[in-house]
Amino acid sequence: MKWIAILAACMAAVVSPYPAQAQMGGQVTRIIVPFAPGGARELLARTFYQELGQELGQELGQTIIIESRPGAGGAIGTAAVARAEPDGRTLLMAASSHFVTAELGAKPHYDPIKEFQPVANIGTQSYVLMINGNLPAKNVAEFINYARKRPGELNYGSAGIGSSTHLAMAYFLSAAGLDMLHIPYKSTQEAANDVAGGRAQAVIVPNAGVGAYLQDKRLRIIGVTSSQPSPLLPDVPPVARAGLPSYVFESWFGLLGPAGMPPATVEKINAAVAKVLKLPVIQERLATQGVAPDAMGVDAFSKLFAEDRQLMARIVKEAKLTRD
Image (cartoon, rainbow, N blue to C red; front, side, top):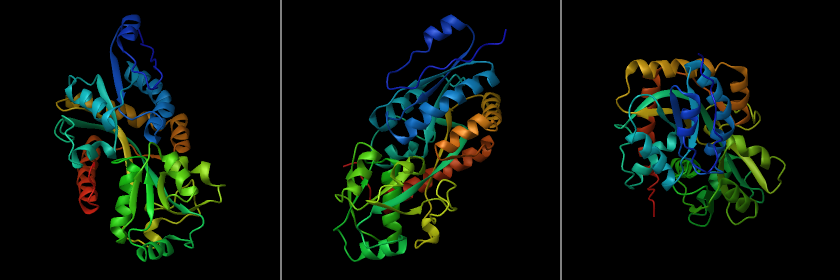
């Protein structure tokens, strides 16, 4: 009998997998989403994983359940996966911020490298640098010059300490040698609204959410953080080509499992994800979220995973970031 893939809605409430298992029989795989509701990563999970869960479940012949378990900057859901049996039935939707809690000196009760097995990469997302539209700067180089002459006088917003938008902007300031005050908000939208209102002067937002600001004359989009122009904003130059050659910042999205998973199980899930990422419905969903699909083998994803840990550690150190 071919099991039917079902999907529980990925909302703020935690969804228990056991009723589905009792009704359907067979194997159940949970994908835990540790991100807080309303953020770009949780939005990606909620909108994209509906299709992914359905297609991946059919490909693997299993029931896939998406379980939202936010809290403590992602540490609660992430720790749950670290403690799970390494049988391939519990996976984590992770991103580059997977490493940040540990790098900021907190104690998340798990080792972000040793206690996880990279399983499958899904794609990468870049970001967009926006400034207040009343500033005299029209591009990245002019903004750097403007801010450099005003050390400590300008503010930038983010979606919170340790968020990808915080890291992206802190990395930009470090690379450009700028001194700006960080104002953490509860969401990227709140941060962007305050930049539009002039209470802060700059913010970096995920490229998927930039559409809401394209017609807002109070904001000026001056650069994308990817090494190449974004298909969503083909006329906006990469920061690396517009005044800061050393700067590139992108986030990966992928699936991790507990350390100790059988290699055959890891390879099976990896191959299934790669096949699903070729489906037009999945590619369309990713495009609307500003994510470029990027299937890679287990070894390649493991290499990316280790390299990104080093990059996140360097950003935290160079930008002198702390949780306080």
